[in-house]
Image (tube, helix red, strand yellow):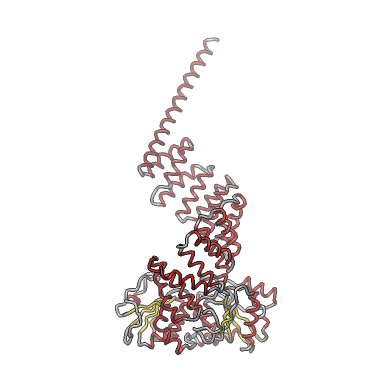
Length: 588
């Protein structure tokens, strides 16, 4: 070997030793920073921990540094600072699917759902069939009310992870949000089967079955199994009592409730109130409204007035000459309309009334009760409801506790009055020069309790649409276009829809529409209550499990003498009930 070659080899050796020493020094500095980052994280200084870990990752790309940076960023406060830090990390790791996925999760926590969606989609570009990331992507889609897109994503997750209970529950949520309750129940059932200890999955299954009006035997087995395992399981006992009532076994339901009454004082106040409220519903359904009312009053122990607790003492039947009473709002539009049937009995006791109600009802209630001060329900409450001039407060649903005899001795309609000029104009427009009968139809109750139980399909009303000399008017709130098109294509029936108005946006116009009708056919809901209160001849199609307000038997409505109740027995198909409705309307 010549001297030149030896000199070259020595030089390369020196350079190699120096390079290894430099790499070692850099590794040593990185290790020191990561050690410091872990100490900062342990000490609760997440921002400093992130700074050290991020600088190491940005320079060396070490996976350990990335993991420490992720943990640190997730602990930074406030949330905006955490997002800003994680954004730097995500930008530095464009090909790291896990970091993009974690960033999406943080953005969801910050309610920045559009950005979260983008982060999850970046992660999926790197790992398209990652079931966890797909599951995460569905969350911001749900939060943005893009339920159909979320459904498609959840279905893919279920394909990839068929034994994942969360995937089935998520798909159930997406279907439920599209009012496809029966389909949703199938996936809630899968989630419950895969993870029976998860209380949310079982609750979602129970609610879906209840709202669809199906699965009675399945739910009954659940509750009875609960009570075998724990005879003191109060909630399962109450759910079983409600199910027995819904399946026309009210005597057995009452026996179950009565068996808990001796133990009432041992229950928490909230449970005592639930027990009394269920008792009241069974009493209402038996027709004993007067006895039921004091038990129904217990519901107020389970919820608070929207505007907060009233500042005045509660009225409990004291003399009212010259006194002012705040009647405060509760429940939905239909309930508020119904409870107003008793308002004039309160006035007859000499009371001045301040009436709190849904803001949309103020024009109608103000016209109908000109001596009453109507104010909107708001949070915080409007000033008129906290005035020192008010002597008492009472929940509108509790007026019957002290006024039921007064009400039943003079019950009459109408007690609400639509604008007469608007009513006349609408009637002329809807008749369109004909002398046909105007029949208003509302076939769904999508809001409130058990919407699937109370509702019908528009095409189920076939016998009604055969009535001669009749113009059919859409009184159903919400988007009904698709159902009306199916009715037209399948049966050749035009259900007139007035595109100028949204019934739930303008209830005063809705009242005028109803008042323009010769008759109304409705399921249990706001249209039925408004029609009853406005005095229109009305036929209400009740489900096999009617709400307490309609009682449990008979064809008369205690609130509205002008309303005919058509009941459907448990297990009875709806077509026979609809034929009875058609005959009743035809005879008007």
